Length: 300
Image (cartoon, rainbow, N blue to C red; front, side, top):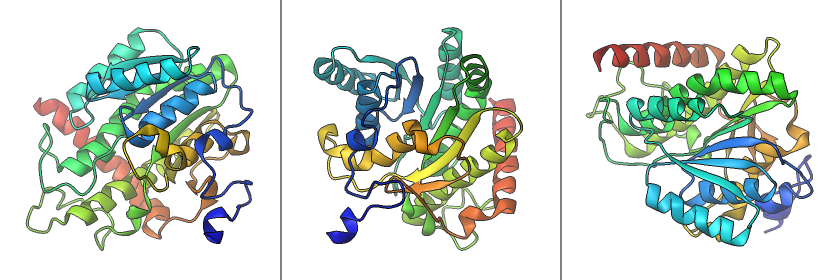
């Protein structure tokens, strides 16, 4: 229990809930998108961001579940500004439609939280015929981020406030395939392991954030970081405060200003795996993901 309570350099620990790590922060005027916001960590992240004044767009696959969460948040926080939009990250067409619908609104975008994910599912292919965990956890978010990036850059320039892209990874990124990412065997069912495939997708989240940070370093005030969200026990978002803490910390806290290409755990900077800091692997994944999306777009 002592380790759980031990504070890191940020002043927070594994036992610091999301409300504590954002205490005193006034985020009024900011707009955020949170994917996978209809349950668990995503729902609690939405609640705490709304509590601090952020206008949150919940990007959810299940609109009924998303609306229920929105209603519960607004009941608790009458001033909350929350909207629900449909997004299925396993479908690149759905990602494109979501990005188009959001962009058409002409709204600013300060914070993008790539939170949605599936975990350790049996071998399946997405609507675009890509292994489902890689498609949902990485590729959908990769495309979504690319499609919203110009809006984020413009918002940062016009508002003078730093934009933040937050990829929710996992300590599970350490338990991936031996080579890290199986570029040539992505859809190989015979070598598939549901937990290592999950690890691969979570490693991809970190590599994506790191490479994005390198692309953004030239003169644009938009940062990109990744994190492990912490333990979760239940789908009832009231219990998700610990799990959502690091996400909310990285999204809102002044301590994170200017920090980019980093990995966080327990609301502190942490050290990811060797694969995760491999710059060549990050570049290869970036090029592979772009090429894959382009090929799939031509075929659709």
